[in-house]
Length: 88
Image 1 (cartoon, helix red, strand yellow):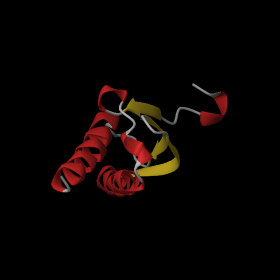
Image 2 (image 1 turned 90 degrees about the horizontal axis):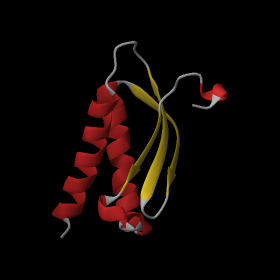
Image 3 (image 1 turned 90 degrees about the vertical axis):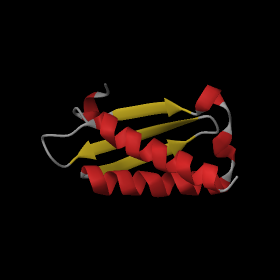
Image 4 (image 1 turned 30 degrees about the vertical axis):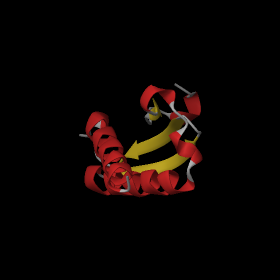
């Protein structure tokens, strides 16, 4: 973990089978919306993000001592997936 990060979670996750889904501006917008919703529900601050074609980097800051990063990721990923499936 980066010393300047001071314990804030740095998260990286890949798209399904490392497919370059995030080349689509629409999918990036859906993911950004999903991250905003996950931040609100989990009381997290999104300090930085990078969307690459096949993966994502996030720097998040929990606003409470008690937090669950796995719940945050589940909300963010599931909402993005639901939105992409609804458009098919």
